[in-house]
Length: 195
Image (cartoon, rainbow, N blue to C red; front, side, top):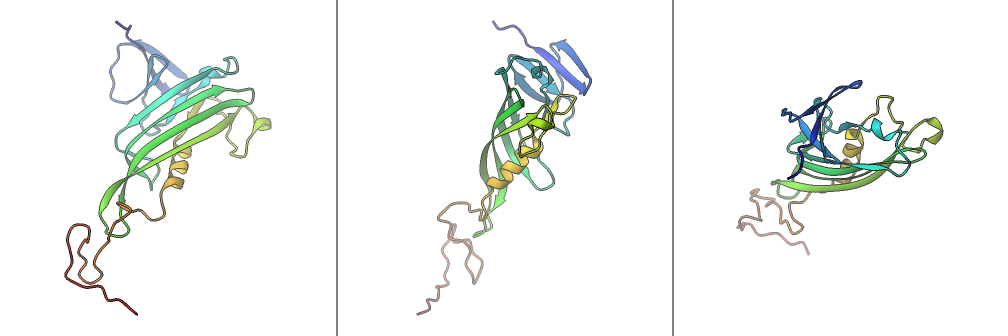
């Protein structure tokens, strides 16, 4: 039998309380056998990595994310979003290696049928300790040790959205005369061929 994990409740940037056996309605993350509950649901991809700052170089921790319907910014809504972020200590800062996948509700450009489009992305970004170690992304580790992956995840997943969203590669589209979905029914109208 496994021991019950400690649960950390994050109330604000300066206060961390430790409890055993707490149940709250919130987002839950697993970190090395401990359950971390982030109270602020406005920032579901924000988590504290301050404990890694004083660790030896090479130490890393994994953060697992699982969400049902979630909105990232005003223009990107997911039916499902999951991912893994590995945060590792380097001489220059904290390196975040992340992989996220999710489904967005889309509309086919040919037949206008709604469907879920799967998206997947991977990225590596360095949160530098100071300005001397900045990379081209310009990310600096905040003083409170909380990093928010939402802007990065959103930007990387937006890039993965296809220009032409298709429900399937062989989508037949709509009849240009009556508007019937040619994937679901045959149309009586003949296509006019131009010679």
